[in-house]
Image (cartoon, rainbow over all chains, first blue to last red; front, side, top):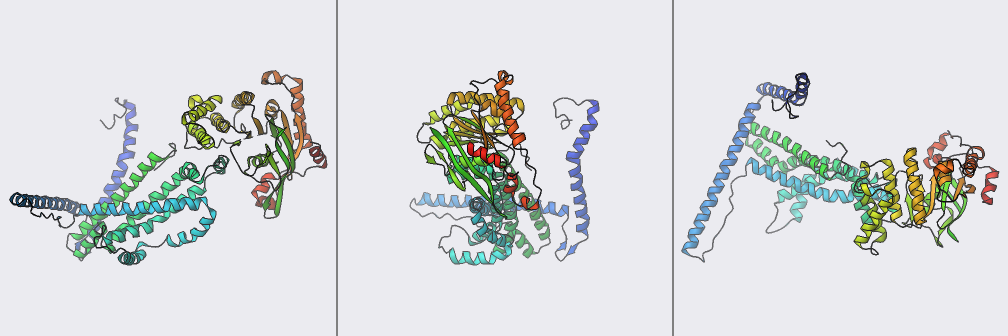
Length: 327
Length: 293
């Protein structure tokens, strides 16, 4: 009854069919779609036999996701125990001799599935932020200046369709050659994945920002001229707000691409993230591997969806046009 | 003393067929505080004249002199009220006026003075009650009021208005015309206003400048309106002189300058500018009238 009683009063008898129909549309239809999918998956999985055993169906995937959570908890418990032991040992040492040198070692257990999700998120956001910091200013300049647009557009069109797998060997070699440090702040594999993500997700933001800025109406440009706005004021007060909707379209496309590219980049760069998890499971080749990869596939999809929703929330909070329908 | 002077202003727009002469030898002298209306058929180049005075277009020959200085670029001393308000949709009415005020008075007025000045100008156009609303939250007439407030707040020497009330319904338009007359009586701005509306031109203007049809449009006749101010639209509706002036304008527009025949040739359509300005060839009589003026 509680789901029906949205208006805070009991629905009249004649309203009930309409309410039920409404509920069917909003809840039942997607649910039926999901059930049909799970059933088809289950049937199909039973008929596919691989060298690593039967293809995982929904049940096996559920079991593996429970396993992964359990592994994560075990690993955390081990880490806590390790730290506790270390602290105890150090405290004893200091009690005997206050001048004793105390060494604190990091726990070096293998990263769990959830650690790898964390690494992937950090990598993708770093790459995406770097790409945005490059693409938005360049997009604004290209949008404002037709000559610059003519100069850069062929390059943009040339590099836009390049696959991350083609960039990766080059990026790997360049990072190895240029990032030489005795005490590196970042792992090379992290930087390789980051720059590959940046190179691939730069373009939608750049192109859409340029389109948004160049589409400013002549009336607003005239206002800017009559007011003699400086270049910077023109950009801040007119170009950026006018281009904001197009810019966000670009940013959302970019983030989607960044997430897709990241998995491939991590797989090959051996950056400890979801891509590496999939690759390691594939190399591991146990009877559980396919199920665990399937969990990763679903998690990758879910995170991609959540990232897009997060961008949408950001867009809604920044957008000046509250009447615009954003989805 | 001449305040604003247009001397031999002509303008050519490049088209695939070669240069298209939109305006030819426009001469006009305007005194300080004068209210001038530009009237003529669509595409006769009225907006082009206004844009040249604003500095948004450059005359091919001739030029515009304001207070002894040639107009070369747009600037806030020649504020423009655009036909479709041209407010920044992401700023409130107050912020739209603020952008202009900050630009003009930065360094010469304090923050508090600027705030008072913004509010004063919004009150002048009766928009003080809704000054923190954004353009999409207010009506067309209110947007146009904010546009006028923004222009007035720049303390312009000349106020340029491009069909400011063209997109409004008749009642709103009458309200705004009355507001404009009120403001002009107080501030004594020099105003150049483009209009299609004969009643509006006669009611508001000191002189009506009637333009011939393009291409190569120019000033056809200039009609001084010697009706004492303040003017009352209801009293004037029954006034013989008022009706005489209306008749003068109407006969210029519909007898001497019949509505231009639309040109349907494909070449004409190639150039948007040329097409927009396409019209009938001016007659010799009009040229004489222009020279006489």
